[in-house]
Image (tube, rainbow, N blue to C red; front, side, top):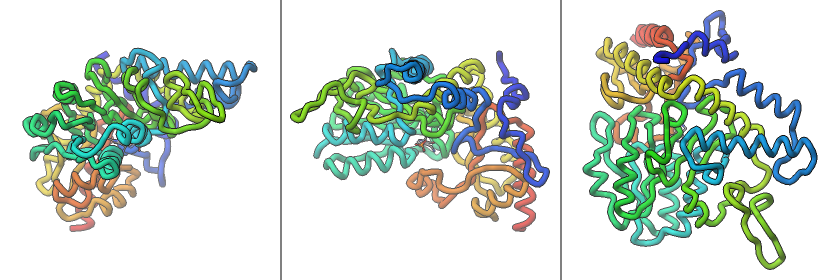
Length: 409
Ligand code: PMP
């Protein structure tokens, strides 16, 4: 269907019934983490209530059931992002761990002096700090693709920066601060023309729009289950099979081995080679349930809903001349979030005042400090939307902001 049945969807999320001093919660902090539907909560609860056991190694009934559910969760996630199969899906605890996995397992071995890693100025610290540190340790150099005044990547600059010295391009798909949707498939083509790999940070894109790793031709892609109706502790690293096969493990220990002697060890098949120790079993099962839940709603419809809410918020903000918004202008397709500042009120004061209206937004640097430096602000307020948010909730936000403005004169 074209439009989300938001009233129906809201019924699945028990937390949305919360009130604070009689004021209903307006949850607009989905960029940080999403709420969870009954379907996901029930799947996790059912696992603990009826088939909790360790996976992979047990021959007893419970372990078999848990193993099948946990392993099949990889298949579900593979389908969700268009991967070829479970071999390409490594469960991690979040996007951050997925970035570190590739940086440590691939970057530390493959990078050296003369090599370059190209990122964007809008990278989240999860990729920026990780690649910056790996470059420091290996003698490689990190470079940053510029953004223009409206928060778009300068693709001419991208074509300048990505050269035969480039080994890895790491780019955020949808910016968690600007809402910009980056042309990652174009970046992938440029990277591949120079025999470089591309790592796509899908933390804000996989939850909110159809993402197909093969259509993008991503070599690696990372995302977090907790931002897409799944539990905390569920993250994913997608990697092309041949790359994961060539890579050495990141963490050593149980479950990731095939054969161990006092002299040496051989690694398990994919993806288990990268899942050392007892994994987040319940979280993996919950993530698969979240993928099914979102699939039923339809990712195209979700993307449209996100864009509509962002456009509406931009239009409402435009009514005030003391509000500055960041990222692409109204009318340009974007992710479902808007960062903004008001002349007279600091973002932190703003978010704490509007908390009195039970409106939850985020204030700060959103883990993009270098981007905030570039924008010339220390902090921004950010409203971020998801499948259960409405225009009426944005109206509540705008009214709360109006009141905050009166208080601060
Ligand atoms: N990248 C982006 C674009 C994000 O928005 C986030 C979450 N704020 C992350 C990476 C890191 O995700 P996590 O904290 O789940 O590792």
